[in-house]
Image (cartoon, rainbow, N blue to C red; front, side, top):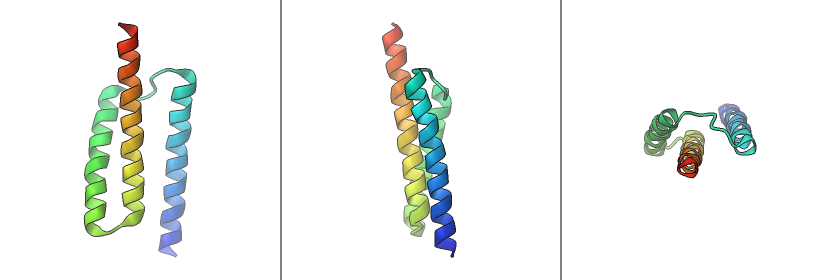
Length: 85
């Protein structure tokens, strides 16, 4: 039962992040400050490593996806700043 709850939570959280990222791409506006994205991505990387070490696949997937979304937000933010110059 716990695996189903974990997977349901994983799906809902990822869906929320993907909706938010899609809105950023669609509006072409930064929704997440760069400093937040860097800290969030770094934290997600460390949590991914921790999840691998303890063998918790739900959190490996969740934290790895969070890290990838943070990286995408960082890339989007840097590309917009470069474009403005």
